[in-house]
Length: 172
Image (cartoon, rainbow, N blue to C red; front, side, top):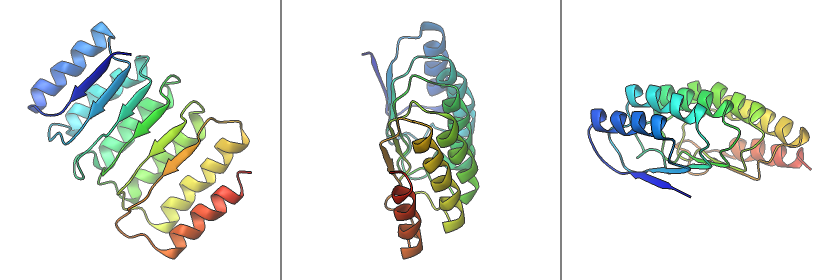
């Protein structure tokens, strides 16, 4: 396994790293952490790379403010065609309910993910329900997803808990 850790750097530097990885295809595991360069421009380049490379895990994306709705959308679109990646951990992605449709689409189309973590998102109960519905579809269709963690949401309520409980009761 070749691990790439991208902890800090300017936006231009991080984009150059992604461009080099697209050509060399050396990474199978990528780890982003507390990196302020993860801008929408970065995600446009990263999405192309993720969609076309045999990456088995992408972990610790975000630092509680960076990915946002646009980055989440680009990342989910790229992951929809990546059938190799098993783990996607997007912690602290600062995503709102607007990012729920791309996540729902990802969970309905990507059957190879075993772990999806989207902690600290700010999803409404309606947005979470749309994702939960596709998770049930994923389970019923024989998908590999075993862990879906949305804990520590900014506005978590008992209704959010009920949605997740019904989702897992429906995925027997």
